[in-house]
Image (cartoon, rainbow, N blue to C red):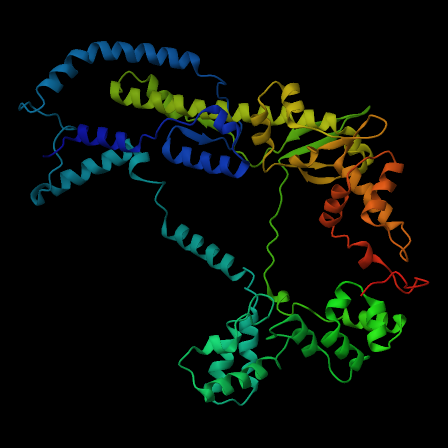
Amino acid sequence: MRLSLGQELRLVQKQVMAPRMIQSMEILQLPIMSLEERIEQAMEDNPVLEIREEEQDLPETDEEEYESASAETSGDEERTQGAEEVSGADEEAEEPLTEDERELVIDESNDEADFERLLEMGEQFPEHFEDGPRLSRNAVEEASERKHDAMANMAARPPSLQDYLHDQLSWFDLDPKLRAMADLIIYNLDSNGYLPTALDDLLGPEAGPEDRERIREALAVVQRLDPPGVGARSLKECLLLQITPGMPYYEELKRLISDHLEDLEHNRLPLISRATGYSIEKIQEVVAELRKLNPKPGADFNESYVPAVTPDVFVDPVEGGGYRVRLEEGKTPCLYISPYYRKLLADPNVNPETKQYIKEKINAAQWLIDSIQQRRNTLTRVAQAIVDHQAEFLDKGPEAIEPLKMQQIADKVGVHVTTVSRAVDDKWIQTPRGIFPLRRFFVGGTVSLDGEEVAWDTVRLKLREIIDGEDKSNPYSDEQLVEELAKQGIKVARRTVTKYRKQMNIPSSRQRRDWSLAKTDKNVSS
């Protein structure tokens, strides 16, 4: 069945019509990156949306135009209603067709007329047939040159650990089978340079004694490569591969690594002293040399990706005291409705179906614009309420942060607590104290002995302060840390102290003890 030109245009319109826009509350709860993607998708689906690049004299609201256009459209619909009913009822009947409604039929004898009609359709409906104006040859060449320049200026990918080791194999005169097994070991190393797989598992069950001997030789070759310690199967083997006879305390290092690595981990220096005969001072000197070794020789080749953080909210001091927040203006584009489609909507010569299509698109676009503005307003109010509550933090530093719950901000702003949670999710704020995630200002707390609320961040800072000032010859246990915090008016449980100590990577009292300062070791257990 062939379609008329008008039917084809209506079919194209139905295909490009986007589903209804999401609710404004959902727009409010989207993070910045998702909002940008949603805007891009909306602009692809909705031809009436445009980005304002320069300030234009455009009306802020389109209510009058909508009313006038709606009135005109309703009049047009009344005038054409009877004609549409007849057209729908007698669609199959043969009627004389106008020039624009003639069927598009491939006819070699009349191809020029069909091409002329297609060109007219492209000019009348450019959004359906072309993504943009056709570029000249010079413009295409300039764009291509820019892309080539950008590719040439891109930073080269740093060599991986496997590439670095594989290149070093060319320095050795190896037979092909031994080289192949060395490559097999290299490409099975983990990101730290260790070999987590047993040699026999690399070969498989069909390997013979000759292959097993050859892969051990290949492992010895790999372990001679740079960086030192690569190809090790354990921490002990990794450290032993890095020490050489010319190093200071070579024999002592070899003995401590081979026999007392676990004791060193738990700071059992008196036990090591009794077993080896070394003095505490000598053991500490050997440990200082041991710390110069690299327990993860392959980690330097790992690409560390540090995402760039762009603040969404800025905090500016106000003259006379206080702070005021403002949103970042450059990331979210300024959207407006295209004047072309407004004029098209008000044009009495446009058929009712096209007007109805444009009205739906304009309503969806206005819905999106209003939702984005509501989202910005909500984020501004929430951020301002947070800054007002945490003004002491901005004035004095992290030790002055106050306990804050999202429900408090929700009550102050007048929104639901889930709106606050999603509004601050993945948002960053730039303050005079640095850049922080907005969630950083929501902290729990406890009640001090004086009845005042104390944030958990303050407890952590106090705990760090007590540990830094303790006697390293007899450091505080977790129970003693609880008592010291109580002297400062902070009452917490021992398990809370243990949890925060581990979160801050603070060793236990045994590991923090400096045995060179200890007078006796009578309380030391093996």
